[in-house]
Image 1 (cartoon, one colour):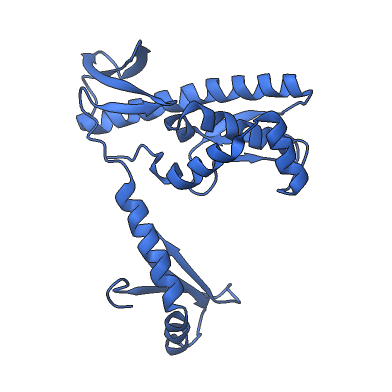
Image 2 (spheres, one colour):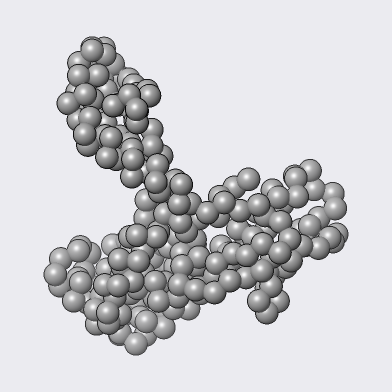
Length: 235
């Protein structure tokens, strides 16, 4: 395991009662109750070495696949299957707006942030604002056509989920989904709206998704394969 896994981080907690092995961002963390022998923990890691190596290798590949942005003039960002070209200007305050196929960022002259940091903040804020507009419109329209009613629609950045529907009918989306092709966005909306009918992933749930988004399987697969690339990383 030494080739793929140079170190293992062990985190003890007095509140923990069980052993957990987690691989995140190609790093291995072992969580254990305080006082549990380290030698036994390392033996458990060794016993799971094949699983850990596979997990680390796949996560390293995913990290390699993630886009790298310079946040500079004339750079392109994906948007609903197309591309927006970044156009940077100077102004009294920091703003961002769309002008045709350009995404215009006006940098504030008095900001203490570096230029790439300002651009990232402005671009991320624009995507987040636009995501709420797009996703709420799509959600309400689909609910209206299906005779369903959703609660509050909101957006945020999450690590593990693209969407979530509460038992009260509130729906939350990851705003970075706007970096995906629009049919993928439509599938995600259909997925969450279907949870208004089925709060599970039973066969009945997937039949509901098919009714709302025929042929959803290909877009679901696309999200599984490419979802890790849908990110606007901070500078």
